[in-house]
Length: 304
Image (tube, rainbow, N blue to C red; front, side, top):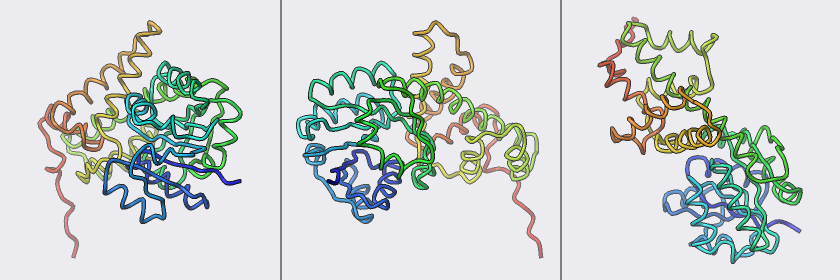
């Protein structure tokens, strides 16, 4: 018997995930508040739903790719998803949330005879589109069984981290410490290099093939150099993620000075008005601080 699968949240990552789920041969229904996202999803062969409740109706596996825990709670409870899902259905929460919120949502779902697979993902829009996400997952055996084929369709690696929701979110929050710091470091480095007179294409090649490289550097710096801030993952999302990192530090009485500094740079970017742009737009804070615009970089000489 085939599973009834729905996905709520057809943004930059959700659409990529949807395409790979459909390509794996699954029937997939979807919902998003964006008409543009729905049109793109329909063009992939997905089944459109006009509400969260209709997407969840009779659903065995409901995948949530929303921004935060508040949105997940809104979808599940305020908009009625839990009342529509099949008995013993699985909610696969792919958003980055606090471990405490993951446990709370799982507990509330259990009251409706539903289970949660805590399954935050990493890899960005590129990974979502390529089906090469890394999934950090924790939940009961039933949750893993129901979600198994979908996990295989969207990821290159699934880390089975335990039976309890909240464990996977703990790993994801700690991971975001590195991702956020590397993002801000990349912006700081590239503007310093520009002001120092480095050829930025050469600088990018050197760093991206040397010890100073990071995945975030290789992925985000080309966007900074091209001035392409089309949102794949917004500045405000990383503000939220580093909020979660600092919250974890506070709860554990752990000092996190680098996380705090990176968080402040992202908050500054949001306050500059670029919070809804791609997170690589954090570079604009450094442009303002150092008084040098990347768009002012010398252009390559034309060869004849």
